[in-house]
Length: 323
Ligand SMILES: Nc1ncnc2[nH]cnc12
Ligand SMILES: [Zn+2]
Image 1: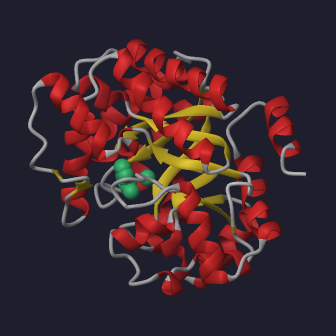
Image 2: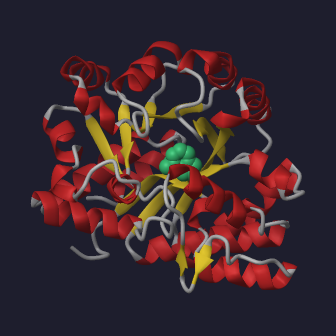
């Protein structure tokens, strides 16, 4: 499996894509100490809660448009080298605000990086605004209202990340209604840290086109059938799931079982340097674990492009690159 297999990444948190090397450079720039969450060239955290702390620590060191332009460009050029032709990045105005950056400066900075990466590699990218679940429904609604005001043309979706064990999907239904009515694509993290009931709640109350992770649906046969029949696409991130201890090894991961059951599945990296991964590695792991050949891997990319939150002309152009 080589970079020649075209890839599309639907699930990557931009703040979670900052390499320890880049975060160290930012820390030097701002005179900050990262020893609490970076050791040598690695992030250090012990569980999901601790991971969120490391994630927030890194995010706090991106404080200007230029910082975010550099982050987006570095991430996108890196995955373009692995064969990615399309990416959607989760962008979190709450993290930008915590670092003192206005939403407009945040989106403009990211867009500058996206533009630079497109100019150097051809990669397309769109932004999905996310609310942070553990900040509560009001903050998530504020993020949805912001996204619904269409503050940047590259914003094409709305989602929710953060601590899945906080609240229930129904608590956040209004936020997603606001985003849906504004014509944004809808995705929500579910079935990662919480079980099938979280996926069921998301389907019932949020009506998403896609679900971030969703893998724990495998624990409920009827739910797997419902997912398959609905056509809802799962943004599966096996490397993330292994790093966070959901499954002991790739052979135990449900990606292939979901695929065989007819669920539309895609491959992404989530927070690549935190989990020692990249979209290229995710495709490689899948090829090795389940014997996927080039056609099978390309089919995964096709599913991702069909589910991408993008205009139809660009979708057709990208799908044309798979032939
Ligand atoms: N894997 C993940 N799950 C939930 N929220 C996140 N934010 C960043 N990465 C996340
Ligand atoms: Zn995620």
